[in-house]
Image (tube, helix red, strand yellow):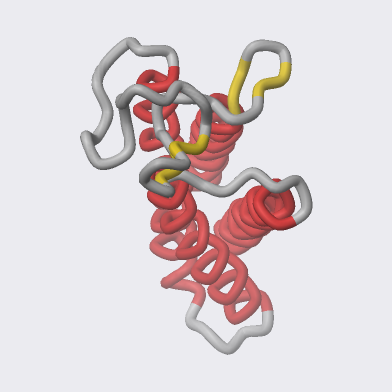
Length: 156
């Protein structure tokens, strides 16, 4: 698979994940916590770099020598979101401590109304036992691994 297609594919995946997160936020009524926001930043950058870079490469407006760099950067950004998601899921499962600004306290629901803070250590939504952070970890790290595999196979 060509590097521009890898960048486009992962950029599109990041855009889809961001649209899903925004859907949960604005349509489902699940406000993001601080760590949720951390996961969004690399996906936003991956969507912009992957889609814009991939389209510029495909249109011939960007030198093809830049294709592996754009694909690699997109892969790394998607993987970064996945790594943050693993950390967040671990905080939700109480495997390790999270940031003190959004964890703990006497209230044990997803939204601490006394301080108007969405808690990072309480999953607001789960499906089949996994939270949104858990799904982001699986999808992002899996996609980044597939993208990296495809990029290295292309070079071989």
